[in-house]
Length: 497
Image (cartoon, rainbow, N blue to C red; front, side):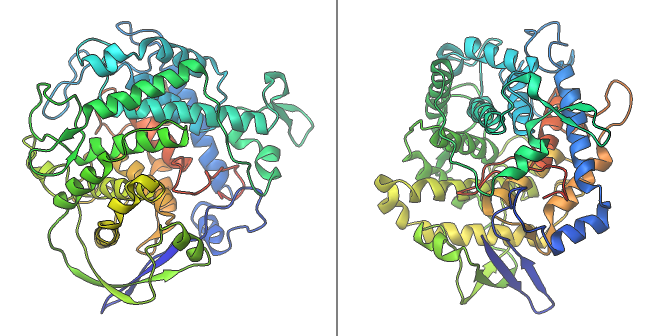
């Protein structure tokens, strides 16, 4: 949406944002961007991505029902003795159902696929107020992450159903195309159906009408997130795993859980489900208090694009023709964490997560007439915080590891960058095409051959890490995060655009 020029004494570092990602049917072939990708990957860049996504989806579907201790609709197998840093995770049956639904649907899989269909039916029956709001104990008890993912899963499910209908692929018998020899080839995912993806220049607005049961689980998820909202012991407020008062160690509130909650609540807004937005100002205050107080100085100019006037009308623009001074200031998990010293320090995934949360908070508050007056008092602070956070990302850029955290939750970091790029309308960060660099890593790291063919798992995730990491990888490759007033891009295999 806009271009951010970081001017330093040594170099000009560009944090650029092209116009909204083109639909596959747009006439613009991507120009220099497409050429860069062809030079790096060869002309089969799009085919490589889609092959990887195909294999990832196929592997993920096979993980459903493999755990004899879990319902057959749940994905992945929990190890006999699972451990994760400071604690031992519970069954996470909700996450192991909802997150794969989100990843598969956003990857373009059809909702009548048996894996997706059965998983949704199980969620509708088992995600209840008793488990989500009443208490945490028990196999189907949920957490903040899971409540948010339920909302994202339902939205992804309806997006998949909508896109399938738009492409006239509702009937499974019509899901084929002809190859060069005239033979019928099954269409595995609507996201790669060439004719349907290229047909329209502009998509219609998706006006979802939720099924009664889906409406109910979304309302439960919103109530659960409202119930889990808590005042932080160190200023501000936000989310942790459980309800306030549950047996948890410090921190009372953390950046990661708060970001997930806001992602879920934004999905609720898009689904037409209301919640108490006054919480968001408190979350903003928490994020303000958790950002580094100082950082290296960077001179910057926000350069408007042709979309800038529209952004200004909507109150979202942070552009300016005057030079500004930014400071590279990032975030950690929580400065008061009792888990580890790393959690108190600044690193990449938490910095990107905090920026994502701020972008979403700003978007939600600006769009709400009842909150606009309150938000106007802190909006400029928010813009400075976003700019300083982006400056930290530029100064510490890498897609080979989680900056300042090594391989700790590396795929989670890749996904936070995907969200940052899509939510912020940013195609390059510090002159780096984040998608090219991340896609290259994922193409290199995808497992090839054997029973694990198609999965991703560097082993730095909560168990079952293979399922969660594969979901993160799929969502990155499909650039699957809904942006702020931005269309959802579709990769068709044609040039990677």
